[in-house]
Image: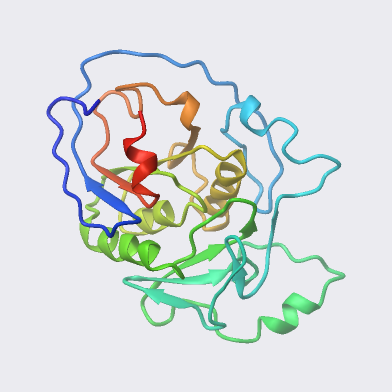
Length: 242
């Protein structure tokens, strides 16, 4: 069901749907969510519900890792970054926030190339992660980023439906969004997105909230006023499925 007083503008290709929308919330719902502390590459408190990440990483085996040129689910990025719109995408180990293993010199040696945003583009650093799809290599991701770079207004709240790696949320925050809500059906994607947001310096309280699709209720995505922009870089079938 489409919420009342909702304006939708579609600007995407057949494999991607992008919406600019305003929602008016008429009903009230409340979801109790437990918070737990979860150690990640860039230390932060995870706000993902405990059942979403329960037993996701056993025996201290992380589902994410860092590489100079590999990101997402194995996409290869140019050594000097992938420029898209007003941002440039790099592998996670190029981030100044990334903490190196003192015994691992391989990544340090590979990081001699310039991986800063001295060309005026906002840098985005992405981890390798299970189900962390979205690096800008695929044309629909690139389309969404280019659109967001022009569409986001200061203070906007974004709904990133099918958030994957969280790249669209990161780009939107760089463009001035005040808050992003990432929704995904894959727990691994939600963890990867949250870690990527932290790696890019957006782990401040309230700037990004990850939700599993089972936690999303009508008119409850963003109380009390709803969201300003919704982007969904996923198969159209996922959006129209009852």
